[in-house]
Length: 87
Image (cartoon, rainbow, N blue to C red; front, top):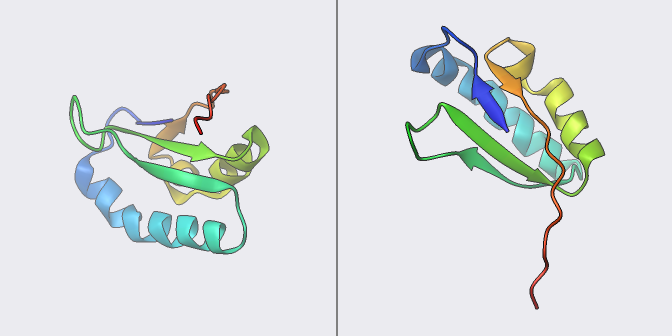
């Protein structure tokens, strides 16, 4: 999960978004374990987002190179999840 850092506004995030998008597309194309990602729609779109990965290691690897984190725009929080798989 990402939360925007205090003082980071939407225009700054949107300026960085093309780099973030290129990064997650390249990460996935290279076999990275990214299953899904995107912003929460409430309470306010874009203030926080979540990604789902195949493993904690893949999430850590993703966060380590993501422009949103590297440029100081977002604070990551990694949570382990015990997913229930339905047939």
